[in-house]
Length: 176
Image 1 (cartoon, helix red, strand yellow):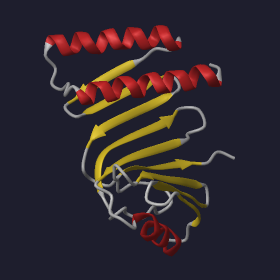
Image 2 (cartoon, rainbow, N blue to C red):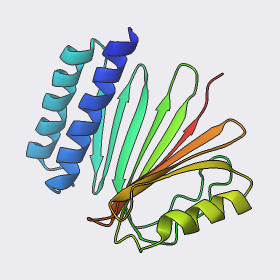
Image 3 (cartoon, one colour):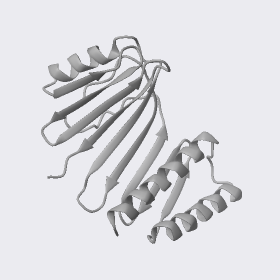
Protein backbone atom coordinates (compact mmCIF):
# COMPACT_ATOMS: atom_id res chain seq x y z
CA UNK A 1 0.00 0.00 0.00
CA UNK A 2 1.33 3.48 -0.82
CA UNK A 3 2.49 5.77 1.98
CA UNK A 4 -0.20 8.34 1.11
CA UNK A 5 -2.97 5.75 1.17
CA UNK A 6 -1.65 4.38 4.47
CA UNK A 7 -1.57 7.88 5.96
CA UNK A 8 -5.14 8.55 4.77
CA UNK A 9 -6.26 5.27 6.32
CA UNK A 10 -4.63 6.18 9.62
CA UNK A 11 -6.37 9.57 9.68
CA UNK A 12 -9.72 7.96 8.82
CA UNK A 13 -9.24 5.42 11.64
CA UNK A 14 -8.41 8.13 14.13
CA UNK A 15 -11.37 10.25 13.06
CA UNK A 16 -13.76 7.37 13.51
CA UNK A 17 -12.22 6.49 16.89
CA UNK A 18 -12.57 10.07 18.10
CA UNK A 19 -16.20 10.19 16.99
CA UNK A 20 -16.97 6.88 18.67
CA UNK A 21 -15.45 8.02 21.94
CA UNK A 22 -17.07 11.43 21.75
CA UNK A 23 -20.53 9.92 21.40
CA UNK A 24 -19.95 7.40 24.18
CA UNK A 25 -20.34 4.25 22.13
CA UNK A 26 -19.88 1.24 24.34
CA UNK A 27 -21.44 -2.10 25.05
CA UNK A 28 -22.48 -4.54 22.40
CA UNK A 29 -26.14 -3.97 21.68
CA UNK A 30 -27.25 -4.88 18.13
CA UNK A 31 -27.19 -1.27 16.93
CA UNK A 32 -23.61 -0.74 18.05
CA UNK A 33 -22.49 -4.02 16.49
CA UNK A 34 -24.12 -2.93 13.23
CA UNK A 35 -22.30 0.41 13.53
CA UNK A 36 -18.96 -1.40 13.91
CA UNK A 37 -19.66 -3.44 10.76
CA UNK A 38 -20.71 -0.34 8.78
CA UNK A 39 -17.51 1.49 9.80
CA UNK A 40 -15.41 -1.55 8.90
CA UNK A 41 -16.94 -1.62 5.41
CA UNK A 42 -16.34 2.12 5.00
CA UNK A 43 -12.67 1.84 6.00
CA UNK A 44 -12.15 -1.26 3.86
CA UNK A 45 -13.48 0.64 0.86
CA UNK A 46 -11.37 3.73 1.67
CA UNK A 47 -8.13 1.85 2.32
CA UNK A 48 -8.43 -1.34 0.31
CA UNK A 49 -7.48 -3.29 3.45
CA UNK A 50 -9.45 -5.68 5.61
CA UNK A 51 -10.46 -3.77 8.74
CA UNK A 52 -11.65 -4.95 12.13
CA UNK A 53 -13.19 -2.46 14.59
CA UNK A 54 -13.88 -3.38 18.20
CA UNK A 55 -15.61 -1.06 20.65
CA UNK A 56 -15.34 -1.99 24.31
CA UNK A 57 -16.66 0.70 26.63
CA UNK A 58 -14.32 3.69 26.34
CA UNK A 59 -11.80 1.79 24.20
CA UNK A 60 -11.83 1.58 20.39
CA UNK A 61 -9.46 -0.76 18.49
CA UNK A 62 -9.00 -0.52 14.75
CA UNK A 63 -6.91 -3.26 13.13
CA UNK A 64 -5.86 -3.28 9.48
CA UNK A 65 -3.19 -5.16 7.54
CA UNK A 66 -0.88 -2.20 8.14
CA UNK A 67 -1.23 -2.06 11.91
CA UNK A 68 -3.41 -1.50 14.91
CA UNK A 69 -4.70 1.72 16.45
CA UNK A 70 -6.16 1.74 19.94
CA UNK A 71 -7.78 4.80 21.45
CA UNK A 72 -9.03 4.85 25.00
CA UNK A 73 -10.56 7.24 27.47
CA UNK A 74 -8.25 7.22 30.45
CA UNK A 75 -6.81 9.56 33.02
CA UNK A 76 -3.70 7.42 33.58
CA UNK A 77 -0.25 8.14 32.18
CA UNK A 78 0.85 5.07 30.17
CA UNK A 79 3.38 3.01 32.12
CA UNK A 80 4.80 1.16 29.12
CA UNK A 81 6.20 3.97 26.97
CA UNK A 82 9.56 3.21 25.34
CA UNK A 83 12.71 5.13 26.23
CA UNK A 84 11.89 5.91 29.84
CA UNK A 85 9.58 8.85 29.08
CA UNK A 86 9.07 10.80 32.31
CA UNK A 87 5.58 11.24 33.70
CA UNK A 88 4.00 14.58 32.75
CA UNK A 89 2.97 15.94 36.17
CA UNK A 90 1.85 19.43 35.08
CA UNK A 91 -1.65 18.67 33.83
CA UNK A 92 -4.22 15.88 33.56
CA UNK A 93 -4.35 13.03 31.06
CA UNK A 94 -7.54 13.16 29.03
CA UNK A 95 -7.12 10.19 26.68
CA UNK A 96 -4.47 8.02 25.07
CA UNK A 97 -4.14 6.86 21.47
CA UNK A 98 -1.68 4.12 20.45
CA UNK A 99 -0.66 2.78 17.06
CA UNK A 100 1.57 -0.13 16.10
CA UNK A 101 2.52 -0.79 12.49
CA UNK A 102 2.67 -4.43 11.44
CA UNK A 103 5.47 -3.75 8.95
CA UNK A 104 8.52 -2.15 10.53
CA UNK A 105 7.05 -2.31 14.02
CA UNK A 106 6.93 1.48 14.50
CA UNK A 107 4.97 2.40 17.63
CA UNK A 108 3.39 5.69 18.59
CA UNK A 109 1.51 6.90 21.63
CA UNK A 110 -0.39 10.18 21.79
CA UNK A 111 -1.28 11.39 25.25
CA UNK A 112 -3.86 14.19 25.24
CA UNK A 113 -3.57 16.60 28.18
CA UNK A 114 -5.75 19.27 29.77
CA UNK A 115 -5.46 21.76 32.66
CA UNK A 116 -1.75 22.32 31.96
CA UNK A 117 -0.01 24.47 34.58
CA UNK A 118 1.84 27.66 33.80
CA UNK A 119 5.56 26.94 33.40
CA UNK A 120 4.96 23.33 32.36
CA UNK A 121 7.17 23.69 29.27
CA UNK A 122 10.27 24.54 31.28
CA UNK A 123 9.50 21.98 33.99
CA UNK A 124 8.94 19.12 31.54
CA UNK A 125 12.06 20.08 29.59
CA UNK A 126 14.04 19.77 32.86
CA UNK A 127 12.41 16.38 33.61
CA UNK A 128 13.34 15.10 30.15
CA UNK A 129 16.95 16.28 30.43
CA UNK A 130 17.25 14.69 33.87
CA UNK A 131 16.08 11.38 32.33
CA UNK A 132 18.79 11.57 29.64
CA UNK A 133 16.82 13.05 26.74
CA UNK A 134 18.31 15.59 24.31
CA UNK A 135 15.80 18.41 23.88
CA UNK A 136 15.14 21.54 21.88
CA UNK A 137 12.48 24.00 22.99
CA UNK A 138 10.35 26.52 21.10
CA UNK A 139 8.39 29.01 23.20
CA UNK A 140 5.68 31.32 21.92
CA UNK A 141 5.19 33.52 24.97
CA UNK A 142 2.02 32.67 26.87
CA UNK A 143 0.45 31.38 23.66
CA UNK A 144 2.09 27.96 23.73
CA UNK A 145 5.21 26.09 22.85
CA UNK A 146 6.84 22.83 21.87
CA UNK A 147 9.59 20.46 22.94
CA UNK A 148 11.31 18.10 20.49
CA UNK A 149 13.32 15.39 22.24
CA UNK A 150 15.18 12.20 21.44
CA UNK A 151 16.71 9.42 23.47
CA UNK A 152 18.21 6.58 21.50
CA UNK A 153 15.67 5.33 18.99
CA UNK A 154 12.73 7.05 20.66
CA UNK A 155 11.44 10.51 19.79
CA UNK A 156 9.06 12.76 21.67
CA UNK A 157 7.14 15.90 20.80
CA UNK A 158 5.28 17.90 23.44
CA UNK A 159 3.03 20.65 22.08
CA UNK A 160 0.75 22.85 24.15
CA UNK A 161 -1.68 25.71 23.76
CA UNK A 162 -1.18 28.13 26.64
CA UNK A 163 -4.50 29.92 26.19
CA UNK A 164 -6.58 26.72 26.33
CA UNK A 165 -4.19 24.95 28.74
CA UNK A 166 -4.33 21.84 26.54
CA UNK A 167 -1.58 19.84 24.93
CA UNK A 168 -0.29 16.57 23.55
CA UNK A 169 2.73 14.37 24.18
CA UNK A 170 3.56 12.22 21.15
CA UNK A 171 6.07 9.40 21.74
CA UNK A 172 7.30 7.37 18.77
CA UNK A 173 9.93 4.86 17.83
CA UNK A 174 12.34 5.97 15.13
CA UNK A 175 12.92 3.66 12.18
CA UNK A 176 16.41 4.05 10.81
